[in-house]
Image 1: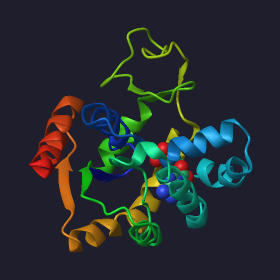
Image 2: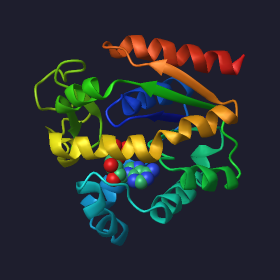
Image 3: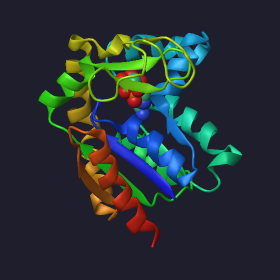
Length: 213
Ligand code: AMP
């Protein structure tokens, strides 16, 4: 199954992607994670993306479209994939439609801006493997240490309050119109993001299981 997870930054797309990835044994592809890795290893793409990312802006379409084209060509995407954080603009969605991977379901996780700001302040990410935690909703067993790999957990630079406001503005202006885009294709499913992650996961999986029958 080919799935897109839509939603504002901090709505919980990454966490849902982790669960679906395990449940359906298909890779979860996060453009944000790919860009952060490129930044860490100092590649040319990472250098180009850095200033946009740190300012809470979108990285130019041609860069992210290139990233996704390259990633979807890999063998592990043959049985499907979950896209987390792509597409984020109409131009990206149109490019994806042309790549020849017909999407089955688009799940939009809806959370109010107020809740987003509160949630993002508690988000922590493993510096080593990228696993996502939340100090209140999904704490690691040992504070500051990743359960999966023992890496150090830290707050993303772009999760600071001022940058979050900018990311939300960009989301409403450039990404939200994708809801209508996929609604017209008959692929959009809306999930109200719940306070407890497990409740959101239950709703998300119910939609995906429906899709398989
Ligand atoms: P994320 O981890 O999905 O919140 O992405 C973090 C940042 O990476 C975003 O704020 C953008 O700067 C950049 N980014 C990730 N995905 C995209 C995309 N599809 N288009 C443009 N920029 C992106």
